[in-house]
Length: 143
Image (cartoon, rainbow, N blue to C red; front, side, top):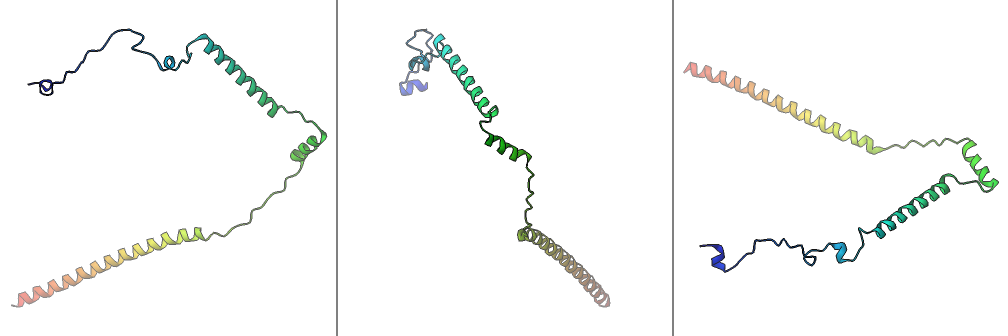
């Protein structure tokens, strides 16, 4: 009993090896984009050369600008030759820094206090049990 005989389903597992152009076409062919043609490469080179020219033009305008008037020269001299006045920022008192230190220190102190109290209580309980055991043995020996 095959699974195919139960459902009457026939599966075709062979692949077509035909090289028919109608069977296969790329997205660029479907959308009519001339991607791998000489015209496309020429346009691409033109675009790259225009981009380089624009970049060099912008760089020249920014970094090699000429001073047009004496006002620009005066402003430039004021920028580079004048003495700068130092700015002293007033000190701010920040309570958050103090609080951020106080809370952990308080927590550590409380934990150590609880630790030592527990140890002290355990020691007292052990001593009390030892005394009770001694008293119990003496009473047992007396009987």
